[in-house]
Length: 83
Picture 1 (cartoon, rainbow, N blue to C red):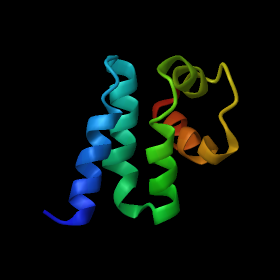
Picture 2 (cartoon, helix red, strand yellow):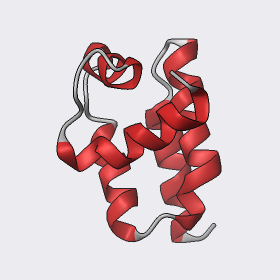
Picture 3 (spheres, rainbow, N blue to C red):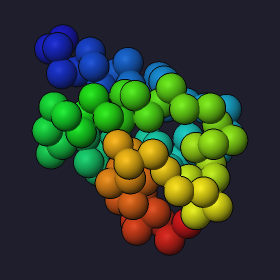
Picture 4 (cartoon, one colour):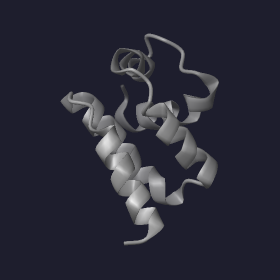
């Protein structure tokens, strides 16, 4: 297993939030965007996963403005899913 595979596996585990909606949205980003993301964006996604679920859900649904560091990732997810 390569270091990239190990990182992807760790992120996939952390992206499992216990709600189907968050699992689906975060898992989508891993499947669709991770491989083409640069190291900084991957680090941002890793840090995004430290966000509490209610705050993350508010960002994804547009009920709150995401932290600037995470805005691009949140926008990508929202655009793909029309959340």
